[in-house]
Image (cartoon, rainbow, N blue to C red; front, side, top):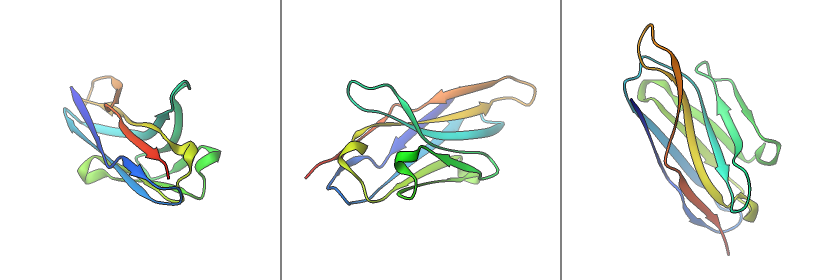
Length: 121
């Protein structure tokens, strides 16, 4: 089993910054793509950013130039640096990870419990 624990959410004013972290632990043989999703009230969960094990990243258009995803493979941790935050960035942010738990085992996707980000003046 693999656990993902997010941290770093909170209340911030428009234009401010937050850095989210997500640490994975448990039975991890290989960690593939890791990502950040968000879900605002009344809306579907959407992909914010993702990063491969090799460091290639992609972003949803609304956060390009403002958010940066990164990862530390030695620590099995993914980060999301969020700058120039807007009201519409308010949501619960979830991380996920594509993990192979054993050398010859299958790959599974795991989710964190979510962390609230609120942008308000």
